[in-house]
Length: 71
Image 1 (spheres, one colour):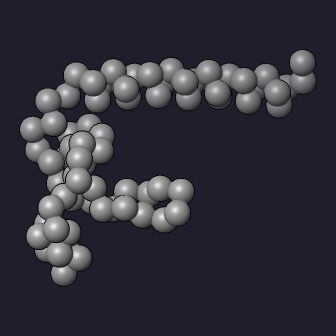
Image 2 (cartoon, rainbow, N blue to C red):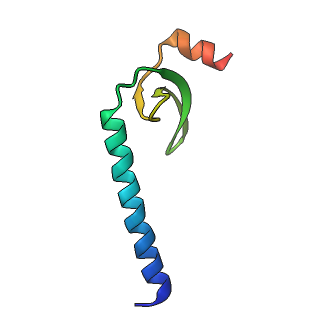
């Protein structure tokens, strides 16, 4: 195995470990403080309700909240 491939595999392994840790933190978070933010998607951005502590998308804002966010 060449050095670049080995490095890529090590980085992908570390990324999987980090992703699992983030999922664990988000699963145990109570999402007490939520904010309205733009969140990236495949086509651009969506406006969503996001936990301020862990960064997990937790829902959709109301129409009034979207208007307030956009102004």
